[in-house]
Length: 101
Image (cartoon, rainbow, N blue to C red; front, side, top):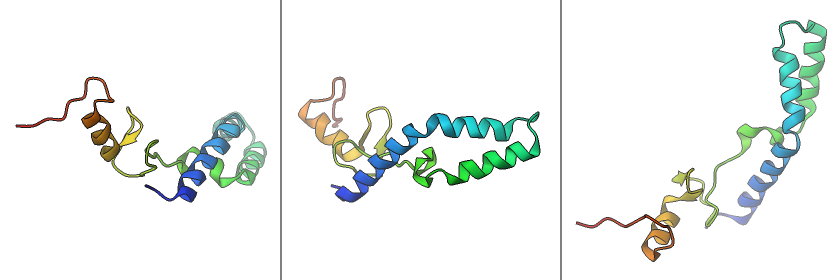
């Protein structure tokens, strides 16, 4: 089980990223626009820098929803390999069978 503080920090980052998603996208569009003046681009860059760092999508860490484990994460199932094996052995994931030979 991951530290509760790390899981909560990641949840906070996800909330901030969702909150500032539109504002961030609008500012980045101004910066990338070739027709915009350099002054407007500079102002947009400064406004983008004023936004909270944790509102950036790149700061989000994929974590297992069951245990909070950051590594060995399967995106499709949103859980770690360890939790996947436990749930699969219990028969809680349809179509998943633990192999044996």
